[in-house]
Length: 354
Image (cartoon, rainbow, N blue to C red):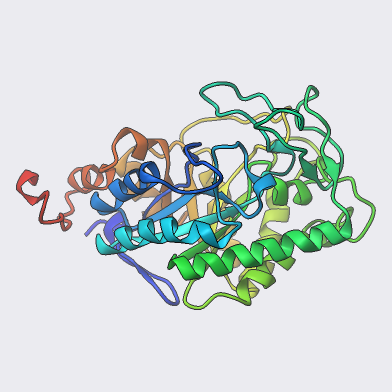
């Protein structure tokens, strides 16, 4: 059996295979509510028998949305529609997680198929953004408001309350979004965090917000696996880098994070990313080898043989794929065919199996 299709045993869950649908924003919600689009979008991957699905960035407060179309989990009324998705995915035999997120200074934008521009606070679909420091992502953006200590504490509580709702909805995995230049990453990087208090300056201070969120979420988990998505490097001089990512991985592993989902970039516009096949895999490999934590590799992993080799060489434990699953929601079946693996098909689709 190919390694891609070997189960992965977590502390409280068994993943049927090593393929993970990466969180992909759909910008299709109203007031944060999931709808038929989200059910069908996520459900199709489970029908295709992927091991794990991570739901798109789901905001813990309204102002934490990237756009007015983002999913939310900031109120109890969001739970029923989310639970419907979770239940359907479970019925097909896949695991599902939710990515808890706050966009920080990169919030208040239009839907990307209209424009990637940020709306000012006076716009009907916009609001005032917040960040660790009042530094806009784009020069043309309205500067974010620097969060006070009390506001930081309120956001830690918002992540905790969101995790409680995720537990009630039945998710198997809670993933904290600390990557791609969103709020937690903004605290991590010295390029976006210029605070001089307990949340800025030293490595220990810049990770404090994240550590507090991890501890708060851990206090409400019942049977969930806690995952963390990070940008392993800012790809910019003076920014967050792989050395700090390894230090962070050591710490969070001891705090109960079970899987590190390793991406990169997104914090600053002047980043220089050498995009190529497997360009982010070395980060997952180094974190895995130096800390022993389970890691997921992501980014331009398009072929089954490519995914198999990453796992075979011990560079990661899981393969996260986004665009490939948009192109082919049943990519799992194609990978199985390419690798000569005989996987289960759901009975409704089995007559199409060669």
